[in-house]
Length: 379
Ligand SMILES: Cc1ncc(COP(=O)(O)O)c(C=O)c1O
Image 1 (cartoon, rainbow, N blue to C red):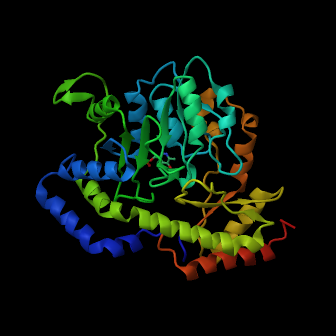
Image 2 (cartoon, rainbow, N blue to C red):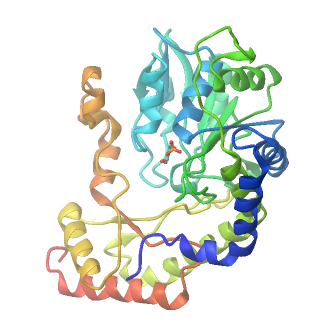
């Protein structure tokens, strides 16, 4: 079986230090927002080159806390991408604001910045780009647009830790960066975890206040916030993993390079991921785009063929956010997002993790080549 992701190999690699850390925290008597979290926040701030890191319970809360810290709520609009995980737009709704989707670029699958101007209204307060699959959105244009119209930028970096846009790490480009440490992420905890990053002292203070029920001083609450704290055990594990993140992201890039090379003979049937040459993609996912008029049907057959040879593949994301029932009240018309409509029928993600072996990769690409030979639909 070749899974889309294998987490035990990473644990085996770091087993001694992780086991030690688990016991150390258990014996310490500090379990939430203690010395491990504090040390992790400092180490992470150094790694990302940001002034403040605020640990929290998960990436979804990080997005909500960022919007609340920016005082975005009822009556406000936030421009975002429809090609993401539900947490992105759900957080906007949870803050009381309205998500306004712009279509995506066909190659990077990130927010199409040429559509920002048309999405702007007098209610727009922020832009929320997602660095999808580990590749940064066009932050030059997003920043120019936001500055021109006095909007905040909240970066959804859940899939993109260590990713760079023109030499700058994501999470430090906009007002707030939001990260997830869900176990499957490039830097994953042993449960839920997340963080906000910012260079703004006042926002940092608000984020710290909001993560503990809107309280700066215990039992004095100035604003309703959340219980969204990072556990000591998660912070201790993340501290052990953090020094390896660049090496793991490089390993992911090497896996992507090999896929690119091995899939070249199939270029008429599929497009391998587009990569900016001046930015660093960290390949949270390696996502193909199937070609041809019947891509969705072809994808179904390919997935079945891969499954028969015990290779896991996934569709991120089959249903764009504007089509989700959650957003039915927004009355959005899918025809307004033609690129996203097409892309969600074409995408297929292959096994991707730093420890994926050369042999496993060859098994995947050989299985794909065999499947194309056997499937008549693309002819
Ligand atoms: C793009 C994106 N945003 C936000 C989240 C939410 O993170 P979490 O699962 O930690 O709440 C995720 C993760 O699943 C994600 O992929």
